[in-house]
Image 1 (cartoon, rainbow, N blue to C red):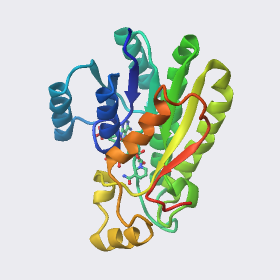
Image 2: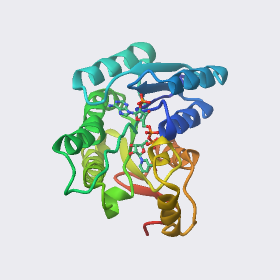
Image 3: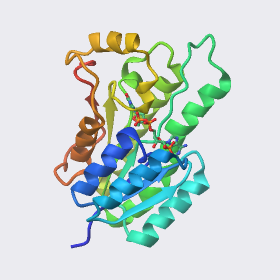
Image 4: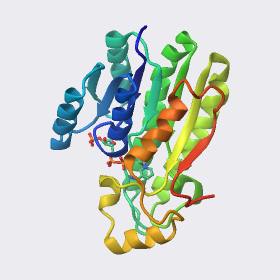
Length: 246
Ligand code: NAP
């Protein structure tokens, strides 16, 4: 039987890397998108190649570049001939209180997180429509639901992803394409590593499970929504946040 193919944007680090590993472990061929040639990327390549019982394609593409995303999807189709799962995970923060937030910091976060999700999804759906099947999981955030002081740009981008996902779910349900969001709370990655211990301690107090989450815990939720086990959930937001938002 032909193996299924999953594309994970921003798969070189943190949550995206954990998602890529989970799909590889479950027997999917995977496409790992990234934007910078970091030392971390070299490590991911080594780790992935060590565990290799599936095909892995690394594609460098900036999700903010529409034409670059089109080329990336063409490369995926040329190699694998299909695309079953898209995980829009690539994301950045540029935090600051609104009073001090620079226009370019607002624009950049929207461009990567929200427009990037559009750029990749738009180029993937023609293939999923032709296949008459597909799963899309977009990584939002609890901050997109509840807001957060110092993250107006990020919260707006993540709330936008939720509206985008619900619209995609409605438009494409008739083609058997299911689209959902996973909204992580505070997860241990480079993105949250920059927070001071005092801030982390304060965050933990707001989490009923009283600890930050692991990237693997997000990956498991993403995998469930994208797997063949999910045949009737679409347009939903699944929080993976230790109970922060109920
Ligand atoms: P991370 O460790 O900072 O990794 C970000 C990933 O996104 C990297 O692989 C990076 O690629 C990629 N990326 C950034 N800009 C890109 C671009 N323009 N084009 C392509 N790829 C790009 O972040 P993370 O914590 O794993 O977060 C992953 C996702 O989860 C993000 O959408 C984030 O907003 C969301 N999230 C995270 C948390 C958390 O607590 N960590 C909570 C809620 C939501 P390079 O390595 O090439 O730079």
